[in-house]
Image 1 (spheres, rainbow, N blue to C red):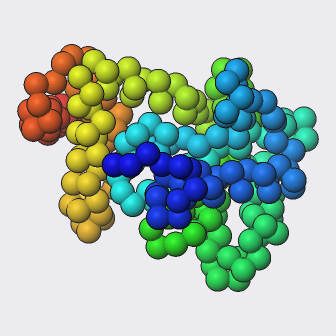
Image 2 (image 1 turned 60 degrees about the horizontal axis):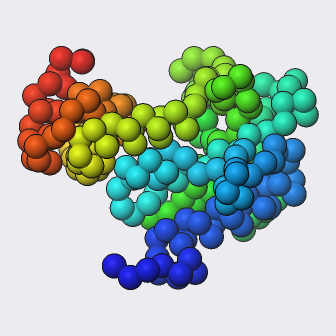
Length: 230
């Protein structure tokens, strides 16, 4: 409720920003990362926070914040997806040796996770420019398919959700958060394989074209129509 000064250890946003800035600087000292700031001089175009945190749809506490790092393609063009993740993992274990020893640096299918606490972690995603999109690694668990490169454009996702939220009168973001909270409470205990990202895309498709009368009405519309997309 009060204006944040950007350096408050009890503020969730400050924790995320501080960890991101520290991690971004240390990774640039160890990896070949593309570097350029936007016209305002505030945000690094090639090393940026993304995902539900940036789209404003993350539910609290802000666990699993996504952090894109766009690498120089010429320096890593001969590496496979798994080798690229291994390079990132080695850089992170060099930055945080104590976290490696405690098992708080974890490889994922697209990223490497650094765990700061039970309620806060950052997923670092290595990426390469591919025209107007990005290539990111996909390394599945053994027996679940072959590794490959996936095409992603998180800035487009952010724009789509923002525009859809405006059309709903600012209600879509709140509805998505409630749907994610429902998923956490209902789907996770039952091991129902549905991701928060897909629920977010589904809510945007169902609700994101017109004004929504109320949050409760939006929830009713979502759950009544979601079955048609299954």
